[in-house]
Every structure is written in C-alpha cells, then in structure tokens.
Length: 559
Image (cartoon, rainbow, N blue to C red; front, side, top):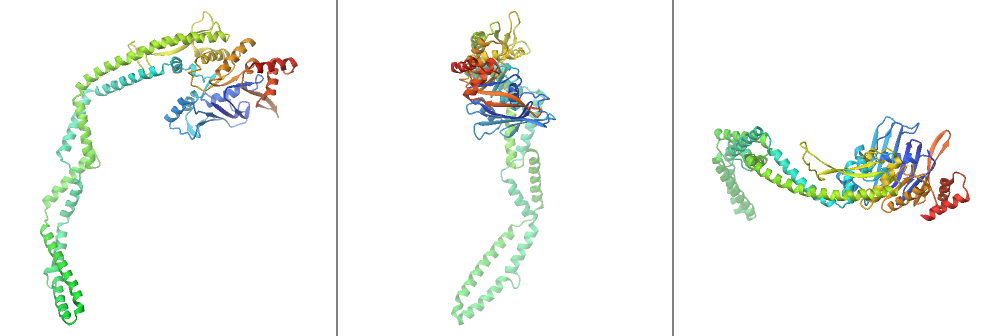
C-alpha cells in the first residue's frame, strides 16, 4: 500500500508531501491545478521514462520519494529476496532523482538499483490507469498471469512448468553429450593420458613430507657424519675425552668421600651423569653407523620430487588435489566412453518427458479456454455497466510455435494470452495497449479490475481521467465500482465528478497558486465540512448555494 509521496522540483511542484490511506482516495481540483502532475511523479518512482522538461524551472534536479507498506505483498517480497535487497521491516522506500543533465539515480531503501529494477518493483506495487505506461494489464506476460489467476490455474500451471523444466534439463544434457565427436575424442584421449600419467607416478598421501626429510638427510650426510664423529671422539675416544676425565673425577670423589661422608650424594650424582653420558655415547655410535652418503639414492629422491612437482604444476597444488583430479577425470572418461549408450537413453527419456509435459500443457490449455470465455463474459458485462456497451472484449490464446510450425512448449504452457478490444462496432479487435483514449482506457481497466479483484495481487490502483466522456449518472456507477474495488485494494482516483468523489473515504484537494510570479501546486486533506464545500463547488461552480451544498451533503450521505 502507498503510504506517502514526496515530490521536489517536478513540473509546477516545488516541494509537496502527500499522505495516502487505505481504501478509496480521491484527488479533485480545477483543471491544470496539478492533479495529473502528482500521478506523473508517482509514475517516475515506478520506473516510467522521464520527459526532458520535467524539472521545475530554476532547479538543477528533481526527486520523488515514496514509502509503501509491503507486509502482505508476497510477490514483491519474493522479488526483493531474489535481488538480495534486505528489509529491516515491511516498509519500502523508493527514491528517484533526475538531474538537468539527464542523469538518473534510483534507490530502494537507500540501496542503488537500476531503472529496470525499479520498474520491476513498481510492477508489484501500483497499476496506473490512464495516459500512463505503468499498467500491468498492458503487458503480454501479465495478461496470461491475470487469466490463470482468475481461473485458479496457477497450481496447474506450476505442475506443467515443472514437467517442462524436467524436459529442458534432459535436452540440455543431450546437447552437452552431443558435442562434436572430434572434440569428444580429443577430451577422451587427453583424460586417458592424464589418468595414466598420474597412476604411473604411484602417488601416496604424505609422500612429499617424507621425501623432503630424506633429501635433507642425504644432502647433509657428510656434514652430519663429521659432527657426529667429532662429538663421539670428544666424548669417548680421544685422549682426555669427557668420559675419561669424569672417571678421574670419580676417583677423587671416592677418596674425598672416605674422608667426608657428606660428599656421598655428590658422588652419586656424578655416577648418574657418567651413566647418562655413556648412553649418549652408545646412541652416537649407533647413529654413526647409520649415516651413509649415497649420491645415487639422493639423485633418485630429487628426481622423484621433480616428478611430483611437474604433476602439481598440471593437476593440483598438492598430492591430495592431484588424486582428486584423477578421480574427477576418471568419471569424465566413463561418461565420454559411454556417450552413445547415454545418448540413446536420453532420447528415450526426452520422448517420455515431452509426452508428460505435453499432456499437462494441453489440459492447462483446455482450462484456459474455459476461463477465457468466462472472463470475457464478465468483463463485457462490467463494460456495459460502465457505459461502454459497444466495446467488445476478447481474449485470444495464441499458440506458441517452433521454427517448424510445431507446438512450442514453455514454462507457462503452449500459448500466450492477448487481451483484445474493439472500441466501436465494425472495428477490428486490437491489443489493449493500442487504445488511445485515457478515460476510455481507465474505464476498461476498471471493468477488468472489478472482475479480477479477488485474485489481483497488485495492492494499489490509480485511475486518472476515468471520468472523461461520461455523464453524471454514469459517474455515479463508476463511483460505486471504484468503491467496491476499494474494499480489496487501495485506490487513488482523479476526477472532476462529485458523484465519484462522494464515494471516497479520503478526499485530497489540489490547487495552484501564484506567488511572486511563480506557480506552485498545493494539496490539502479535506475534513467533513471542507468536503461538502468542495463537492458543492464541483456541482455548481465557485459560488456556493444552499442547493449545491445540500446536494453535496446528499452525495456524502449516499456513500
């Protein structure tokens, strides 16, 4: 639901803020006061194209901001989620800024978006009826949605769409499988070579770490041998070695201990140290015997490391990655090797899937024909009620065809819907979008919206120039229709007829004034007494009479 609209430097409007309410909102005022300008500004915020002269004279840019309550707008909430637009609550703020240089800036909740995205969001929020582009009923894809919604066919269409999606997936798999045979053989040869190269290497997890350790030891064998031999010599073999010196120290301690028993603990500590050093000596001797300088083995290990590095440069950063790549291309080899067998199986699966999809789509088409007939009849009656008895409304279900003229399936079935109108007796039916009269278009849209009100998901409807070419009695009928429609939708209507305005729950008066040679548009919410005066003015002109005031009160009471 549209809650607020703020406009700055747009046409006659310098700075205007409008609050809208649920139900039936009406805008009245003298011709040229700016009522349609307000609706035009709203069209901008919904993604319509901007004219070159929309910026108020003397301003560098114009801006339009609108807030909407979208708590119950499931299609829009789904769209915003798809686009990654997060909401803190259920209030949506749209903003559009246009500079004198022609630059556009569109935002939703202060997040910059494209004009196309703004239009998509607007399509879920508002329908503008009159001399405006922003009308969902004029869009071919939306006409099919309206038809299916009206007939309660969306679930059936979803099932048909799922069967079509299954078919398309199989067709894509077949297309992938049916790549150029030479290309298939090329990849098969390449993958087989790669698998053989990796298998012949006999890679093992953890092998790189083991290689690095062994290469390090063999590369430093001479240095290690020298260091170990020196340590062994100093500890045990050479004259004056550590152990021989400790043996002499032990003899001295034994002699001292005979004199002073307090040195017994010290002597015991020396014994433990000698035992530990003898263990160190034994370990060094054993380690010394294991040291072998083997240039041939070293070369072999380095060559193995180089082999693994070459494989890593081709297939993965680690041995684990290389083995994973091997498993992957082994599966590809299986697919490529069994391509013909798979191709035959896919052809059979496609034939079965096409049969199921066609069956669902044909049943959907039958249901659509019945629904179209019902919608035509009900809309025709509504148009008669609205003073358009000569207009003929027709729904044409146009079969989709492929390049060979055969039925073409899509995710919405076998056909598209076209809403056609013959404005006058003897004239050809033509698409709804080609109807020229804004007032006539508004009444046609009102008739259609009245029929589909129970399924229409667009929350806000705006009717501009809906009273063009009608009389007072018809205006009363139009007012009743809009009032009924307002029980399911928020409606904003611009009118010059008090018979229509009298049905509104909320009345806004638009006026213009000249201040210091500049024209300004103002808007005011009318209270009860003010409404009476405005309706009286619409009935009898600027001079209010007792009769016009009485009639105005009757219009409000009638509501």
